[in-house]
Image 1: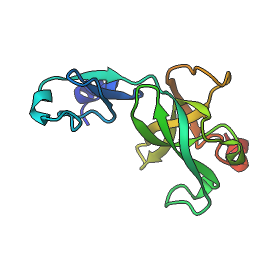
Image 2: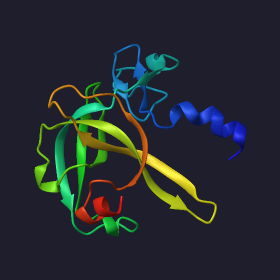
Image 3: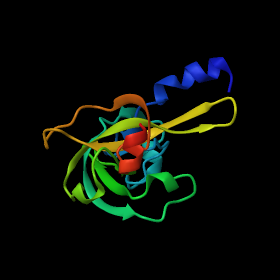
Length: 162
């Protein structure tokens, strides 16, 4: 990726940028060019506008993963949840910063950006969103800036290394 392209795409990094249909008001993540909810889809063409998700939401459902996918073996057990954002879209993400047994349906969470992995000798770092519990149980802050933790809070061994 060129330097110019990197800086052009920076606003999309570390944000939950979606789109909103100005015809029916439905919010989508990731962004869509056309609204599938509107009865006549073509009515939404060129009427979709960027929409920033707050990152706040609640756990709709979750599972505790004990047999990890490749690259996540050091994080087991970890929680993978469906989170309904305050704006409406449902996102899939890992819940971090608490023991897996503490996760509950209806729990308030907020998006946090974490280091997922490093790639190759050049050390290209990949970040992504995860969800952390809110402190007050009600309203959560917006997305947090990236941290250097890898899988923080997913397993006691990870916290000891972080």
